[in-house]
Image 1: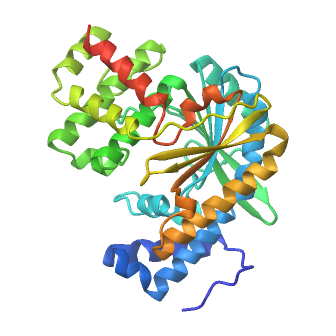
Image 2 (image 1 turned 120 degrees about the vertical axis):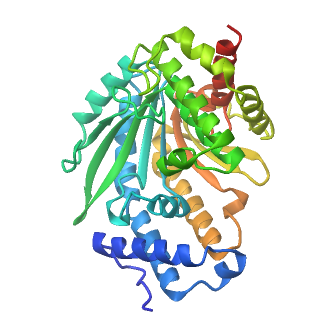
Length: 372
Protein backbone atom coordinates (compact mmCIF):
# COMPACT_ATOMS: atom_id res chain seq x y z
CA UNK A 1 0.00 0.00 0.00
CA UNK A 2 1.36 3.41 -1.01
CA UNK A 3 2.12 6.00 1.66
CA UNK A 4 0.60 9.45 1.58
CA UNK A 5 3.17 12.20 0.89
CA UNK A 6 3.29 14.80 3.66
CA UNK A 7 2.65 17.65 1.18
CA UNK A 8 -0.14 15.86 -0.67
CA UNK A 9 -3.46 17.69 -1.08
CA UNK A 10 -6.25 15.15 -0.69
CA UNK A 11 -8.92 15.44 -3.37
CA UNK A 12 -12.61 14.84 -2.72
CA UNK A 13 -12.41 11.62 -4.73
CA UNK A 14 -9.44 10.40 -2.63
CA UNK A 15 -11.39 11.20 0.53
CA UNK A 16 -14.43 9.24 -0.71
CA UNK A 17 -12.31 6.17 -1.46
CA UNK A 18 -10.62 6.39 1.94
CA UNK A 19 -13.98 6.67 3.70
CA UNK A 20 -15.21 3.54 1.94
CA UNK A 21 -12.10 1.65 3.03
CA UNK A 22 -12.44 2.86 6.64
CA UNK A 23 -16.00 1.61 6.90
CA UNK A 24 -15.41 -1.79 5.31
CA UNK A 25 -12.15 -2.49 7.19
CA UNK A 26 -13.53 -1.23 10.53
CA UNK A 27 -16.56 -3.52 10.21
CA UNK A 28 -14.40 -6.56 9.45
CA UNK A 29 -12.03 -6.01 12.37
CA UNK A 30 -13.14 -3.56 15.08
CA UNK A 31 -9.94 -1.94 16.39
CA UNK A 32 -9.11 -3.39 19.80
CA UNK A 33 -5.78 -2.52 21.44
CA UNK A 34 -3.88 -5.27 19.58
CA UNK A 35 -5.34 -4.34 16.23
CA UNK A 36 -4.40 -0.70 16.79
CA UNK A 37 -0.71 -1.57 17.20
CA UNK A 38 -0.56 -3.31 13.83
CA UNK A 39 -3.54 -2.15 11.73
CA UNK A 40 -3.96 -3.44 8.15
CA UNK A 41 -1.97 -1.37 5.67
CA UNK A 42 -5.06 -0.34 3.73
CA UNK A 43 -6.70 0.88 6.92
CA UNK A 44 -3.64 2.88 8.00
CA UNK A 45 -3.44 4.52 4.56
CA UNK A 46 -7.15 5.39 4.69
CA UNK A 47 -6.71 6.88 8.18
CA UNK A 48 -3.83 9.03 6.90
CA UNK A 49 -5.97 10.27 4.01
CA UNK A 50 -8.90 11.00 6.35
CA UNK A 51 -6.67 12.87 8.79
CA UNK A 52 -5.24 14.97 5.94
CA UNK A 53 -8.73 15.66 4.58
CA UNK A 54 -9.85 16.72 8.05
CA UNK A 55 -6.80 18.98 8.47
CA UNK A 56 -7.54 20.64 5.13
CA UNK A 57 -10.81 21.91 6.63
CA UNK A 58 -8.97 23.94 9.30
CA UNK A 59 -8.40 27.14 7.31
CA UNK A 60 -11.97 27.24 5.97
CA UNK A 61 -13.40 26.62 9.45
CA UNK A 62 -11.17 29.29 10.97
CA UNK A 63 -12.41 31.83 8.43
CA UNK A 64 -16.01 30.99 9.30
CA UNK A 65 -15.20 31.30 12.98
CA UNK A 66 -13.78 34.79 12.46
CA UNK A 67 -17.02 35.80 10.74
CA UNK A 68 -18.94 34.24 13.64
CA UNK A 69 -16.89 36.24 16.17
CA UNK A 70 -17.84 39.49 14.47
CA UNK A 71 -21.49 38.42 14.47
CA UNK A 72 -21.39 37.24 18.08
CA UNK A 73 -20.16 40.60 19.31
CA UNK A 74 -23.49 42.14 18.27
CA UNK A 75 -25.50 39.98 20.68
CA UNK A 76 -25.09 40.27 24.45
CA UNK A 77 -24.54 37.03 26.38
CA UNK A 78 -23.80 35.14 23.17
CA UNK A 79 -21.24 32.35 22.95
CA UNK A 80 -19.62 30.89 19.85
CA UNK A 81 -17.40 27.82 19.49
CA UNK A 82 -14.98 26.32 16.98
CA UNK A 83 -14.10 22.66 16.48
CA UNK A 84 -13.03 20.01 13.96
CA UNK A 85 -14.86 16.68 14.04
CA UNK A 86 -12.86 13.83 15.60
CA UNK A 87 -11.83 11.01 13.22
CA UNK A 88 -13.64 8.41 15.33
CA UNK A 89 -16.84 10.48 15.11
CA UNK A 90 -16.39 10.80 11.35
CA UNK A 91 -16.06 7.02 10.95
CA UNK A 92 -19.08 6.42 13.21
CA UNK A 93 -21.16 8.76 11.07
CA UNK A 94 -20.04 7.10 7.84
CA UNK A 95 -21.02 3.72 9.28
CA UNK A 96 -24.61 4.64 10.08
CA UNK A 97 -26.91 2.21 8.26
CA UNK A 98 -29.18 3.47 5.46
CA UNK A 99 -27.27 6.75 5.10
CA UNK A 100 -24.73 6.05 2.30
CA UNK A 101 -22.61 9.01 3.39
CA UNK A 102 -19.24 9.73 1.76
CA UNK A 103 -16.21 11.20 3.52
CA UNK A 104 -15.61 13.79 0.81
CA UNK A 105 -19.19 15.00 1.03
CA UNK A 106 -19.62 15.37 4.81
CA UNK A 107 -20.60 18.93 5.61
CA UNK A 108 -19.79 18.98 9.33
CA UNK A 109 -16.08 18.06 9.52
CA UNK A 110 -15.49 21.73 10.28
CA UNK A 111 -18.04 23.28 12.61
CA UNK A 112 -18.86 26.56 14.34
CA UNK A 113 -21.72 27.15 16.76
CA UNK A 114 -23.43 30.33 17.93
CA UNK A 115 -25.58 30.17 21.08
CA UNK A 116 -28.05 33.01 21.68
CA UNK A 117 -30.90 33.82 24.05
CA UNK A 118 -33.95 33.83 21.76
CA UNK A 119 -35.26 32.51 18.45
CA UNK A 120 -35.57 36.11 17.26
CA UNK A 121 -31.81 36.52 17.77
CA UNK A 122 -31.22 33.23 15.95
CA UNK A 123 -33.09 34.63 12.92
CA UNK A 124 -31.22 37.94 13.10
CA UNK A 125 -27.84 36.21 13.33
CA UNK A 126 -28.68 33.81 10.48
CA UNK A 127 -29.64 36.70 8.19
CA UNK A 128 -26.50 38.62 9.13
CA UNK A 129 -24.24 35.61 8.51
CA UNK A 130 -25.92 34.84 5.17
CA UNK A 131 -24.94 38.31 4.00
CA UNK A 132 -21.29 37.61 4.89
CA UNK A 133 -20.69 34.02 3.73
CA UNK A 134 -21.26 31.87 0.65
CA UNK A 135 -23.72 29.02 1.13
CA UNK A 136 -23.71 25.55 -0.41
CA UNK A 137 -26.15 25.64 -3.32
CA UNK A 138 -26.67 21.94 -4.16
CA UNK A 139 -29.05 19.53 -2.40
CA UNK A 140 -32.71 19.69 -1.43
CA UNK A 141 -32.32 22.50 1.11
CA UNK A 142 -29.27 24.13 -0.40
CA UNK A 143 -27.16 25.78 2.26
CA UNK A 144 -29.75 26.11 4.99
CA UNK A 145 -31.64 23.74 7.29
CA UNK A 146 -34.07 25.15 9.82
CA UNK A 147 -34.73 22.50 12.47
CA UNK A 148 -36.55 25.07 14.61
CA UNK A 149 -39.33 25.75 12.12
CA UNK A 150 -39.32 22.09 10.99
CA UNK A 151 -38.01 19.98 13.91
CA UNK A 152 -37.33 16.26 13.27
CA UNK A 153 -38.87 13.45 15.31
CA UNK A 154 -35.71 13.20 17.43
CA UNK A 155 -36.51 16.54 19.08
CA UNK A 156 -33.31 18.24 17.88
CA UNK A 157 -33.83 21.94 17.27
CA UNK A 158 -31.30 24.32 15.76
CA UNK A 159 -30.72 26.35 12.62
CA UNK A 160 -27.91 25.30 10.30
CA UNK A 161 -26.08 27.21 7.59
CA UNK A 162 -23.79 25.19 5.32
CA UNK A 163 -21.01 27.53 4.29
CA UNK A 164 -18.88 26.87 1.22
CA UNK A 165 -15.37 28.27 1.60
CA UNK A 166 -12.70 28.23 -1.09
CA UNK A 167 -9.08 27.93 0.01
CA UNK A 168 -6.55 27.67 -2.79
CA UNK A 169 -7.99 25.48 -5.57
CA UNK A 170 -10.32 23.54 -3.24
CA UNK A 171 -13.70 24.30 -1.70
CA UNK A 172 -14.75 23.02 1.72
CA UNK A 173 -18.07 22.95 3.55
CA UNK A 174 -18.35 24.22 7.11
CA UNK A 175 -21.43 23.69 9.22
CA UNK A 176 -22.64 26.68 11.22
CA UNK A 177 -25.14 25.91 13.98
CA UNK A 178 -27.21 28.71 15.50
CA UNK A 179 -29.41 27.86 18.46
CA UNK A 180 -30.90 29.23 21.67
CA UNK A 181 -29.63 28.40 25.14
CA UNK A 182 -32.71 26.25 25.77
CA UNK A 183 -32.09 24.27 22.57
CA UNK A 184 -28.46 23.89 23.60
CA UNK A 185 -29.37 22.59 27.06
CA UNK A 186 -31.45 19.87 25.40
CA UNK A 187 -28.75 18.89 22.90
CA UNK A 188 -26.10 18.76 25.65
CA UNK A 189 -28.31 16.52 27.80
CA UNK A 190 -28.89 14.09 24.91
CA UNK A 191 -25.13 13.84 24.29
CA UNK A 192 -24.43 13.31 27.98
CA UNK A 193 -27.12 10.62 28.21
CA UNK A 194 -25.43 8.88 25.29
CA UNK A 195 -22.14 8.92 27.20
CA UNK A 196 -23.79 7.61 30.39
CA UNK A 197 -25.66 4.71 28.78
CA UNK A 198 -23.12 4.06 25.98
CA UNK A 199 -25.59 4.46 23.15
CA UNK A 200 -25.80 7.08 20.39
CA UNK A 201 -29.28 8.50 20.90
CA UNK A 202 -28.64 10.97 18.07
CA UNK A 203 -28.50 8.13 15.52
CA UNK A 204 -31.71 7.61 13.49
CA UNK A 205 -30.99 3.88 13.38
CA UNK A 206 -30.64 3.69 17.17
CA UNK A 207 -33.96 5.45 17.61
CA UNK A 208 -35.64 3.14 15.08
CA UNK A 209 -34.32 -0.06 16.72
CA UNK A 210 -34.56 1.01 20.37
CA UNK A 211 -36.62 -0.96 22.90
CA UNK A 212 -37.21 -0.97 26.65
CA UNK A 213 -35.44 1.71 28.68
CA UNK A 214 -33.69 3.20 25.66
CA UNK A 215 -36.99 3.66 23.87
CA UNK A 216 -38.45 5.35 26.96
CA UNK A 217 -35.45 7.68 27.30
CA UNK A 218 -35.82 8.70 23.65
CA UNK A 219 -39.50 9.48 24.31
CA UNK A 220 -38.45 11.46 27.39
CA UNK A 221 -36.24 13.73 25.29
CA UNK A 222 -38.92 14.11 22.60
CA UNK A 223 -41.48 15.25 25.19
CA UNK A 224 -39.04 17.67 26.82
CA UNK A 225 -38.09 19.13 23.44
CA UNK A 226 -41.76 19.70 22.63
CA UNK A 227 -42.21 21.41 26.01
CA UNK A 228 -39.19 23.62 25.33
CA UNK A 229 -40.68 24.49 21.94
CA UNK A 230 -43.90 25.70 23.60
CA UNK A 231 -41.85 27.99 25.84
CA UNK A 232 -40.16 29.47 22.78
CA UNK A 233 -43.44 29.72 20.82
CA UNK A 234 -42.05 27.57 18.01
CA UNK A 235 -43.38 24.42 16.28
CA UNK A 236 -43.56 21.31 18.45
CA UNK A 237 -41.98 17.95 17.68
CA UNK A 238 -43.83 15.71 15.18
CA UNK A 239 -46.04 13.30 17.13
CA UNK A 240 -45.89 15.51 20.24
CA UNK A 241 -48.07 18.43 19.17
CA UNK A 242 -50.13 18.53 22.34
CA UNK A 243 -51.09 21.05 25.02
CA UNK A 244 -48.45 21.73 27.63
CA UNK A 245 -50.38 20.07 30.48
CA UNK A 246 -50.83 16.84 28.48
CA UNK A 247 -47.11 16.69 27.71
CA UNK A 248 -46.24 17.24 31.37
CA UNK A 249 -48.68 14.53 32.43
CA UNK A 250 -47.07 12.08 29.98
CA UNK A 251 -43.60 13.05 31.19
CA UNK A 252 -44.66 12.32 34.76
CA UNK A 253 -45.79 8.80 33.82
CA UNK A 254 -42.40 7.78 32.37
CA UNK A 255 -40.52 5.46 34.71
CA UNK A 256 -37.12 6.65 33.49
CA UNK A 257 -37.53 10.37 34.26
CA UNK A 258 -36.22 10.61 37.83
CA UNK A 259 -33.37 8.12 37.31
CA UNK A 260 -32.28 9.84 34.10
CA UNK A 261 -32.15 13.24 35.78
CA UNK A 262 -30.18 11.79 38.72
CA UNK A 263 -27.70 10.14 36.34
CA UNK A 264 -27.20 13.41 34.45
CA UNK A 265 -26.42 15.29 37.67
CA UNK A 266 -24.08 12.55 38.88
CA UNK A 267 -22.16 12.63 35.60
CA UNK A 268 -21.49 16.36 35.89
CA UNK A 269 -20.67 16.23 39.61
CA UNK A 270 -17.80 13.83 38.88
CA UNK A 271 -15.91 16.46 36.88
CA UNK A 272 -13.59 18.75 38.81
CA UNK A 273 -14.60 22.39 38.24
CA UNK A 274 -12.00 24.50 36.43
CA UNK A 275 -10.25 27.56 37.79
CA UNK A 276 -11.83 30.37 35.79
CA UNK A 277 -9.55 33.04 34.29
CA UNK A 278 -9.86 36.38 36.09
CA UNK A 279 -8.44 38.67 33.40
CA UNK A 280 -11.21 40.91 32.02
CA UNK A 281 -9.24 41.41 28.78
CA UNK A 282 -9.60 37.75 27.75
CA UNK A 283 -12.61 36.51 25.81
CA UNK A 284 -11.19 33.53 23.89
CA UNK A 285 -11.00 30.33 25.92
CA UNK A 286 -9.53 26.95 25.04
CA UNK A 287 -11.45 24.32 27.03
CA UNK A 288 -9.59 21.02 27.56
CA UNK A 289 -11.32 18.01 29.09
CA UNK A 290 -9.81 14.75 30.31
CA UNK A 291 -12.65 12.23 30.42
CA UNK A 292 -10.44 9.65 32.15
CA UNK A 293 -9.38 12.00 34.95
CA UNK A 294 -12.70 13.92 34.89
CA UNK A 295 -10.82 17.19 34.82
CA UNK A 296 -11.42 20.38 32.85
CA UNK A 297 -8.70 22.95 32.20
CA UNK A 298 -8.92 26.36 30.53
CA UNK A 299 -6.41 28.50 28.64
CA UNK A 300 -7.40 32.15 28.09
CA UNK A 301 -6.49 34.48 25.21
CA UNK A 302 -7.30 38.03 24.21
CA UNK A 303 -9.34 38.71 21.07
CA UNK A 304 -6.20 39.90 19.26
CA UNK A 305 -4.54 36.54 20.06
CA UNK A 306 -6.94 34.58 17.86
CA UNK A 307 -4.15 33.19 15.67
CA UNK A 308 -2.26 31.94 18.71
CA UNK A 309 -5.41 30.37 20.17
CA UNK A 310 -6.16 28.59 16.88
CA UNK A 311 -2.58 27.34 16.66
CA UNK A 312 -2.75 26.00 20.21
CA UNK A 313 -6.09 24.32 19.44
CA UNK A 314 -4.58 22.74 16.32
CA UNK A 315 -1.52 21.47 18.20
CA UNK A 316 -3.67 19.78 20.85
CA UNK A 317 -6.03 18.24 18.29
CA UNK A 318 -3.12 16.88 16.25
CA UNK A 319 -1.60 15.24 19.32
CA UNK A 320 -4.91 13.78 20.42
CA UNK A 321 -5.60 12.32 16.97
CA UNK A 322 -2.07 10.95 16.54
CA UNK A 323 -2.01 9.34 19.97
CA UNK A 324 -5.48 7.82 19.63
CA UNK A 325 -4.56 6.36 16.24
CA UNK A 326 -1.39 4.78 17.67
CA UNK A 327 -3.14 3.48 20.79
CA UNK A 328 -0.91 5.49 23.13
CA UNK A 329 -3.62 7.62 24.69
CA UNK A 330 -4.49 11.28 24.33
CA UNK A 331 -2.54 14.50 23.96
CA UNK A 332 -1.48 16.01 27.29
CA UNK A 333 -4.06 13.76 28.96
CA UNK A 334 -6.94 15.57 27.22
CA UNK A 335 -9.43 13.91 24.87
CA UNK A 336 -11.76 16.80 24.07
CA UNK A 337 -10.90 20.40 23.22
CA UNK A 338 -13.03 23.27 21.99
CA UNK A 339 -12.24 26.93 21.34
CA UNK A 340 -14.86 29.33 22.71
CA UNK A 341 -15.57 33.04 22.40
CA UNK A 342 -17.54 34.61 25.24
CA UNK A 343 -17.84 38.10 26.65
CA UNK A 344 -16.40 36.93 29.97
CA UNK A 345 -15.43 33.73 31.75
CA UNK A 346 -18.76 33.56 33.63
CA UNK A 347 -20.51 32.62 30.37
CA UNK A 348 -18.20 29.65 29.78
CA UNK A 349 -20.54 27.22 31.52
CA UNK A 350 -22.71 27.07 28.42
CA UNK A 351 -19.81 25.80 26.31
CA UNK A 352 -18.11 23.28 28.59
CA UNK A 353 -17.69 19.97 26.74
CA UNK A 354 -19.53 17.16 28.56
CA UNK A 355 -19.72 19.27 31.70
CA UNK A 356 -21.58 22.47 32.28
CA UNK A 357 -24.32 24.43 33.89
CA UNK A 358 -26.20 23.29 30.76
CA UNK A 359 -27.02 19.97 32.43
CA UNK A 360 -28.07 21.63 35.66
CA UNK A 361 -30.29 24.09 33.82
CA UNK A 362 -31.80 21.20 31.86
CA UNK A 363 -32.43 19.16 35.00
CA UNK A 364 -33.93 22.13 36.86
CA UNK A 365 -36.30 22.84 33.96
CA UNK A 366 -37.48 19.24 33.73
CA UNK A 367 -37.88 18.92 37.51
CA UNK A 368 -40.09 21.98 37.34
CA UNK A 369 -42.35 20.12 34.90
CA UNK A 370 -42.38 16.98 37.04
CA UNK A 371 -43.36 18.88 40.17
CA UNK A 372 -46.41 20.50 38.58
